[in-house]
Length: 90
Image 1: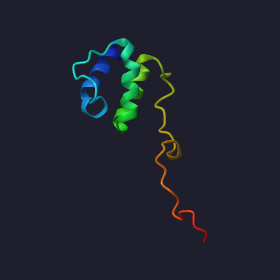
Image 2: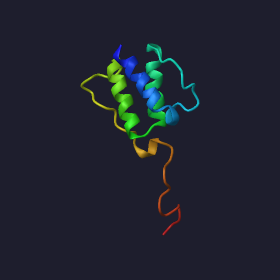
Image 3: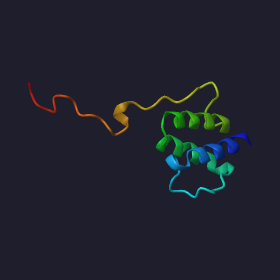
């Protein structure tokens, strides 16, 4: 299966960034493909996010014509920068 082969490749390539806590010799199986995509999204950068979207398309969990999911708005990431006025009245 293409998705499993791709998940194995992405696991190896991103092992130190996204899977540092997992065994390097872990055998990725078909049931692990959604987990690999999820970990790429959680712990990887922009390219890992795109790789996860491609992996999900290969798996069939995302419609092929839907494209990549956009990044969530800044307010939903939990790392909001406080406003410049810091709550002081002007």
